[in-house]
View 1: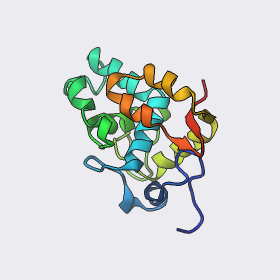
View 2: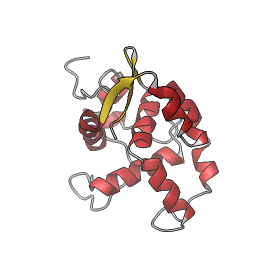
View 3: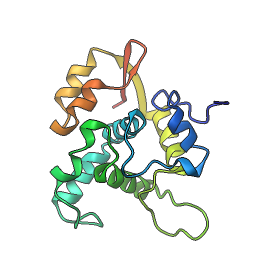
View 4: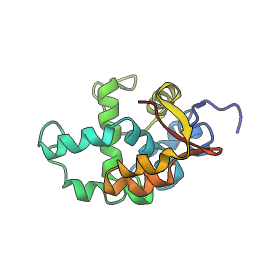
Length: 166
């Protein structure tokens, strides 16, 4: 691949997300699975997007109030699968930051595309820091049960752990 577009520690080494940052045919969508999806989910976990989604669904407010039960939405997170939970996470993130495509689009959607991944990369550069690997147990203990495998696996950077600076 040529010069990387994404350069945060979380996204820079992922070829699939690099492609998504420059070409619309590489949108990440429902049904996709792999490490690139895990990176998106890990970002959302670190940014408290999943926590916000849980509040919305359980309090029956906002556009996700008619969504399926929380347990159904999150059942695929442990397998790095882009299901409804990740899709709703994209929508919440884009709504919060008002990420709307050019042209006829006037409202946010749940499409993980060029603008979204570039915005997330810029956020990851400032909000995610490399910490000693010893923080993994502490971070895992505080994670929701469905995300424990993902957080335990973590996003390693060399001999360290990548997490959001709090």
